[in-house]
Image (cartoon, rainbow, N blue to C red; front, side, top):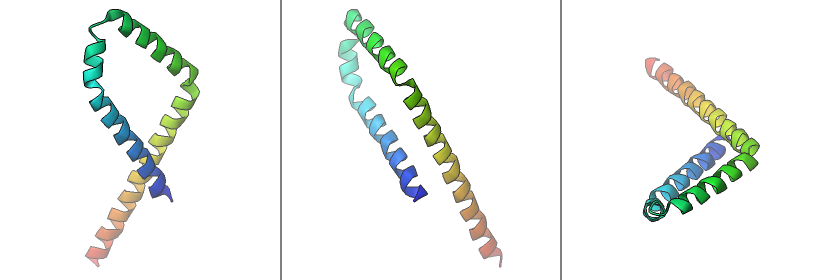
Amino acid sequence: MKHAKVANEIIKGSMTSATIHSGRRLMGNIAKHPVLVFGLGVAAGYLVYKYRKEIVSSTTKVVDAGKDFVLQQKENLEDIIAETKE
């Protein structure tokens, strides 16, 4: 079950990356209008402030899931190495 949670977080990260990549052209057009840049900054700041607790908790969950995944893979690798030595 832990693998499914880690996989979901990885999928969320890749979707975010794809969204950012596709939004480059849009941001290039917005950057030509300083008032829009300021307005977007204010809106983004407001949303980050409003949802700061959720952002911190979800980030903590992702970091913990990543640590658990790495430790589990390390244990699996140690088991494989021990089996090959036998």
